[in-house]
Length: 457
Image (cartoon, rainbow, N blue to C red; front, side, top):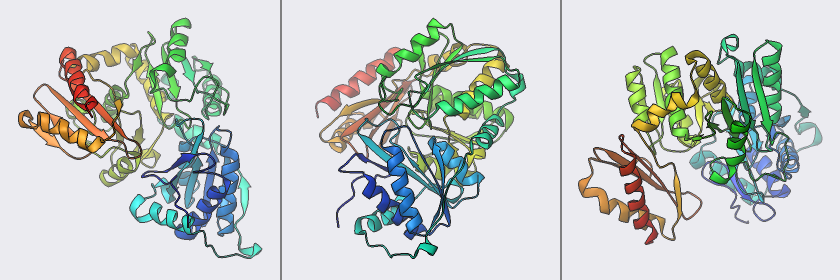
């Protein structure tokens, strides 16, 4: 029995050939089918060169376990979520490596109602079965069926249900699909705007899906991957820029000046948006950056609730609290009406509705938040001994702290600044986030101070 190292805490990811290949994909399909025993499962794939082949091997594994397979073709992860709950299916699997390097691929798996697969009780069991690779043979009449369907019309109709399309102002948008899977959804939304005589102009860059990723891996969190979107906003005098990762479950924003907006402040905007329509609701946030979110939620009569970082934890907390919205500073946004799942399409539709309602620019919407709570953004450091390094930083600041929280890594709070430090689940990386109250110099000083301690390890 060989160990399958592609199984991670939240999903499946690995280097092509040795960690994930067609044989492993087939075994994952068999194991998913044998363990969860679903009647039907939807599958889809991103634009990577190997994703279609991996998906078909996965589908064969599912069918050989007696599972009927619904294939929606090239799709983002959230289209799998939507298909699962909209079609009433027992599960869904997207073949994607999202923003990982070009020689990686993977899968994101959900159960009925797009509920995440629990790592301890479910994903580990699926992994064990796939590693054992001993599956019963089914006769042909017991094997599952396979069919291709399109859910695009219903999916886009659902997306547009979050806004009042007829109240959108004339806006010019730059949308960068990163040569990933988002393009077909953007095309469909554009056609709906035109059909309803809505004056939304979309300037598309890196629009066509291309698994060679000629303009770089679609990961707008990397500063070097932001330039094309920023320049297109300025060149076209656009009102806003939007960029996606490979499976478009995250979207990233640029203001009318081409400036990148940290996802942290978009969480604040969307929290306020939902609370104005749904007073006294619960809003979920992660532990990395949250002072701005908490202030906005309380000001608007809502209840802020903290969750551990990561989509599985956020979705679990969303369901438990029946929260209307949840957001992570890493640009994952979760919605109750989307089966508590994250979407990269819903946020930008809400933002353009906000711009239309307020009749102001995106920079005007977020600048007061940025001034009130300047933040470092997430800074990753390669550290040989992450846990030792984190403990050293904790010891350095513990005596003067107002509060220390261990929900996720360590969060240490003072009167006028705070930080969160956590290690990666898969790499020797330490992730740092720092914010302050109206003091960007203090925030920058403390960020440098902590990084100096970390680099000694």
